[in-house]
Image (cartoon, rainbow, N blue to C red):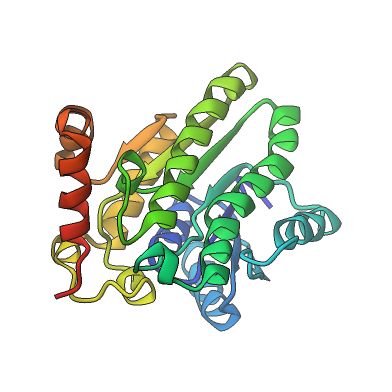
Length: 258
């Protein structure tokens, strides 16, 4: 296999679109998600269209130890990863103390812990070859607190901080780390997170648009990539200057189901 990209959450949404982009550039793929049928369908499509190789690994990375098992399976198959795209993740709506704590712990394991473990497993082989690219799907939510999505916002803040730190550490080894920070995207996230009918998702963009922005930013070795110019401006020039109590009320209102 050549120029191999491992993509988690590859069966739909941004992950699926990232797979299409990488395949269109002649790169081989390792697809990881829970929905094996969807991945096999994508595998057949991309192999036929671009004459590449695609490997499919069914895995629920929200479960303890799943990332380690995946890394062992990759090693047993002698698959070397050139591009790592940690895209799998989910959110959840509601007051923190009223939510099912196990769902939030699964969210932390998938959004933060699995991403961290998988990155730790893959980096040494990139260092050995003196090159590599990592794209971590974070969120514009990373730059603010999130009433009614407290854990989700916090996990994405972790992803952004972690990505920037290791980008700095890995630069001397020829490896870049990019955090993709989209706004609302039409991926079905809002349904899974219980956010249907929330004003925030009325301005959602397509996953293809967001994936294109993220992939291009990764190619340019940028640390942070937004999928909307308005988000770039807001995060840099508005949010830091809004009083914290006012910001919390604004975010809560945007996420209140009507």
